Length: 248
Image (cartoon, rainbow, N blue to C red):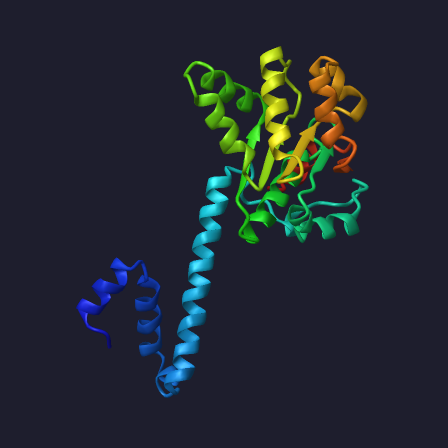
C-alpha cells in the first residue's frame, strides 16, 4: 500500500485517480494476484477512463446546453420525418472536422433546441469544445461589450474560435446596423474554420430580409444558408407531445 507522502505527491500532481485505482486493486483479491504489468495496464485503463469522464463533464458544463441531459437515445423520431441516416452521419461529428455547419429549421416547439443539444452533447463526448447561446443573449453580450473599449474584439475572438457554436433562436430579434456588422465579423471569422449550428424558424429566403437585405446580410447567407446541412424538424409540437405523454 502506498504511504501518505506518496499520496500527497500524487494529489499535488493532480493524479489522485491513481490513489483510488490502487486502493481498488488492493481490495480485489483477484487483482492482487496479477503480475506487475497486468496491474499497471488495469491501473492505466482506470486512470484514463476517470480523466476522460472528468473532461467530458467539464466540457458539457462549460457548453451551457439548454438541455444537458439530451442524447441520441432520447431523440424522438416518429411522425417527424427526420432523416435517420443523415442524423446518424452527423452524430459522428465528422462535419466538425470538415468545418461544416448545420441549420435546424422549424416552427416553435418542433424540437430544434433539443436536437441542437444532442449535437452539442455528441461533440462534447468527442472532446470538442462547444458553446450554446440564444441569439438575443449573444446580441446582449455584444451590447455590453460595446460599452467598454476593446471588449468587442475580445468577444469576437472568444466566439470566433469555438469549434462548435450553437446559436438558438437565430434571427428571432431585430438586428441593428451595428449588430449586423458584429454578426458579419463573427461569421467571417468562423466560416471555413469552425462549425456553427443555427436553430431558426426562418427559411433561407427570409434570412436576408430579417437582417436588412444589405451586403453584409448577403455575405452571411452566402456563407451558411446555402452550404450547411439543412434539417427541417417538422411541424409536430414536441412540447405538447412530451407534456401529454409525460416525457422528460
